[in-house]
Image 1: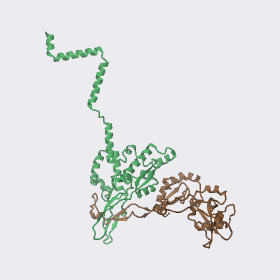
Image 2: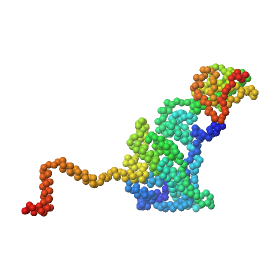
Image 3: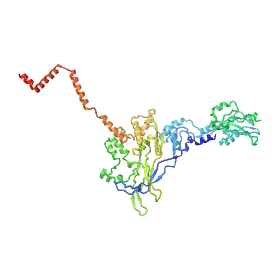
Image 4: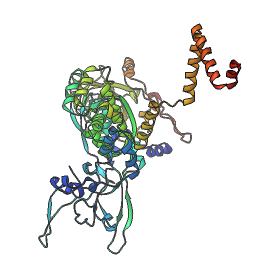
Length: 271
Length: 291
């Protein structure tokens, strides 16, 4: 496992373009000793002292300038089709090369104006990346092991908050069946909720119930990396919903790692 | 904008007319000059635009002073401001990429008051990048500088940058050759076949920058290439077949004609002439007749 982590650290993250910030532009130099006046139709008499230069503009560390581009398609985290947005030079050039954007000249705005209206629009520029993030999400819902409860939207909101995702209660749609507990049969099993983004886009999210006790002796044993492995669903009809989400592929383990995939104890064995 | 205010351009135009032009001749690239003088006028025009118009170049590595006069703060003496251009070297490798007018500066650096100046080269930072040409409909992987990429962005594309920028600013032969291809395509209307409306737009956009075809044939060639082209054109015009081949053919034709048309009157005439000719030469025949 440690080896894997080390490998990951050594790989440069090319995925985000923001890593390439520096650009190296032109050198500009200046004479330390100015050249004297020359008569017309004669060349200046240059001595070695006239070639002593001072560097006026260094090209080593210059921040990237911003390039304004006209988007032809919806681009994740950058903008909607038809918008003129400032992006970093390198990002802008990549977008233009791949026909996702164009230079914002009058001519181009006229040219690509018709295509833009036919595009699919989203409620915000961050919608697609948010939906991608949520589709891969495995939300852990910690419920009490001792006191009885029924699952409500605020439970899910607070567990989202633990995972650093802020979701209002109105955006959460609960499953059709009511889930009550504590029930050891539900431990580590999946059910699905729907999150509505900006009242428009809908995304189903995986949730797994975990029973939690304050007393140390009553706590369930720790299961390592349980979110990296697939689990069973609580309701049989949910299996079709699960197919719409990206499949959880278990990680490839190192040979020297003596980790075993999590095996949940059934309710009977716990008692 | 003229960057050179000394020498040729410093003189008032009315005086400039009176002086002999050989006074302002820059004796640089002598060997090239001798060759270029023998090449056609079309190439000479390109050569002057490319290498001989140094006063028109946009300064890349130095900032020219814009004010006309300068007053000495201590003495109050007023002197004219002259922008002496900086000497910048353009290596051979520049012709394999698009550097946006950048070059190598060779100079000295004095790091302390009591230290002697040390040589230093300021070289451009090169990188390989991909540029796209709409007219040629191709992606090129070329060595570029950041300045070149920024110039392309300012001009809204590679086509516009190459076509609108004159040869003295482009400098590299690769850029000039691409420019030539683009202008050729514009002249022949050999681009954007799938989208005729776009073709019209581009034709309208670059209408001012079109060059006549005779000049375009010689555009973007180095001196060596131009000399080679001239040589090949001359050879193509010349008829290099040796004289003995020509004469032999003529003789053959003559003989054939004689063989094909052996009329009696001609044969008689030939025999008559031969006898008369022989009789003139040979003295014994005459004597024989006399006997």
